[in-house]
Length: 201
Length: 201
DNA sequence: CCCTGGAGTCAACAGGCGTTGACCTATGCT
DNA sequence: AGCATAGGTCAACGCCTGTTGACTCCAGGG
Image (cartoon, rainbow over all chains, first blue to last red; front, side, top):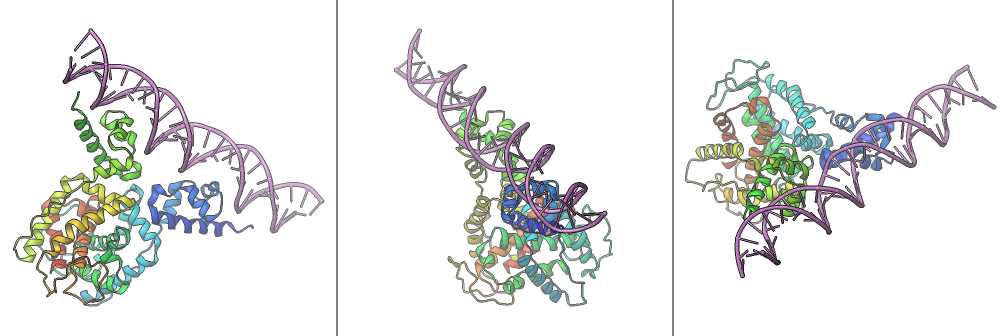
């Protein structure tokens, strides 16, 4: 029984992810997670210190974005859509993140982090469609230039891609609008693809 | 002091909306709303019966969609985008709805209701871009036909429009991705427009 | 064989929550 | 003037929460 701590820790995390994802931060209680894992609530505290610690551990996540291949943009977008749908169907942590980003400051912050660390750089590495000057740095505020369409700052394009993906996920997995929730993964990807492509152009 | 109940009721609702919108359902307490309104918690119960009653009253909402004018679709989408941005900037109830749709069953249900009662019929009334047969009835499940692009069921197109709008709102108002949150209303509408147009075509 | 220390339990705490029912107060009708 | 009543307060209830510290148990090294 000496090295069993890690096993228990992992089992706690597993149930915590399930509950955070299903009901959000507030409605998930240390006690309910402990009961689901078949242990004492105090043990959860021993492992993660605090409820927020457990939460933080539960939403460690990687989007595993494929390296931006040299494909036509439409095809690239379709691949990306397939990737996201597959990931979303198989990764509870993503639903946790989406649910808690809406209500808990920590969730929103983590979601921003995933965006700035993973999505934004990926889009920035892409050849700009319009004819952008390529400034992708720590430029946060909208830089005055409000082109009617087409060429945009990389960070803006990245944010729009994120909004397309998150909006789709929100409607399909969280709000569960019937028309979207009932789709097969392939259908879903087919419908999400063009939305992504629009903002990569 | 005889007819002051309505005034008080309205003040309660005002503060309730602010708090639900800022922190979601769980973190908003009857006590904190009462304190903000300068009254006793018990009075809130007298007016709304229960916390869920207060919540339900706080998210009565109308999108006030303009009648679908006979405009080119791109222009129509742009108008719609402006309308949504303006509405979102001025209506706390919308933020409440978005925040709570992610965590509370009642919120999700209400969001679905707003969608089916207001967005879906509006889109259905539009002339289909592709060459649709015009079945706009209570057809919920994806009806097998998975065209690669273009012509789609009205309910699917409506759902995609909703996902575009909600995704944008989520990133701009809730997660507050800097590139989107910093935009002026006009800029925001300019960027949201094409996403809507894509799904109306 | 004892004894150290990690793994886990137990009971309790302090505080916040939604909700309730008894109570007060002042207004407007008769 | 007197009373019914709407509008509002007060103190308390039972419950659930995150968190804590003392306690038990047992594997393994000396």
